[in-house]
Amino acid sequence: MDSSKKIVILISGNGSNAQAIIEACNENRIHGDVVAVISNKANAYGLTRAESFSIPAITIEHNKFDSRESFDESLMQIIEGYAPDLIVLAGFMRILTPMFVHQYRGKMLNIHPSLLPKYPGLNTHQRAIDAGDEKHGSSVHFVTEELDGGPVILKSVVPVLSNDTSETLAKRVAKQEWLIYPLVISWFCENKLNFCKNNVILNKKQISRCGLIYEEL
Ligand code: GAR
Image 1 (spheres, rainbow, N blue to C red):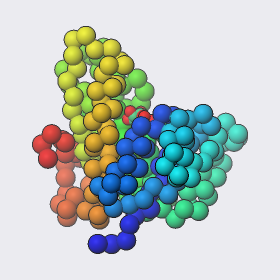
Image 2 (image 1 turned 180 degrees about the vertical axis):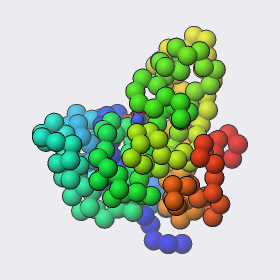
Image 3 (image 1 turned 90 degrees about the vertical axis):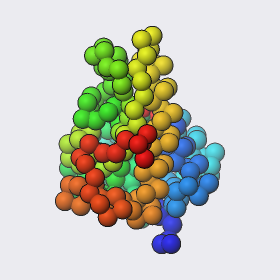
């Protein structure tokens, strides 16, 4: 097999997805290593999680910069110091500049807590409840210039129960995120997953823009 891939994870908060990915690397479910966890918030609990695995945990606070461009440039400099093969956005709550997205096109993944293209942006769980949806979930996609709009690779679907609150639904979605994100990353690290002309290629075959459904794999 090819050499182990270097993964940089960007977070803003809790970091439960980052932990799931680190554990999957440690258990060889991902043929890769998380070489750094970077947060734009100093109090992100995910930094503590990274340190507990002896992974460099770096803070770069966006509010210390006078523009989105200057923040992204400095973030890129830090990232480039690790020469990563893959950038993983795991609850990184920042809109990225076109320059940043272009730099990592085809090697940057995001997870979003909705069945994309439904509910890009914030408050996805409450929006699914308010809309009376019977199903909700999470989507892993390649990052493009469009916010939460890049082609989807894998989705996980959960039921919305009649007594759900945004919190109970978020917990159900999160448990699935901890499965699907490491799985997609493992495909990337095994060179099974590519991004070509805005399409997702898995095992040399183009998949639908809506992505695969985890339960059907
Ligand atoms: C996850 O649910 C992820 O889908 C969401 O933030 C949460 C981070 O949780 N991401 C977004 O909303 C991005 N648009 P975590 O910090 O515990 O991994």
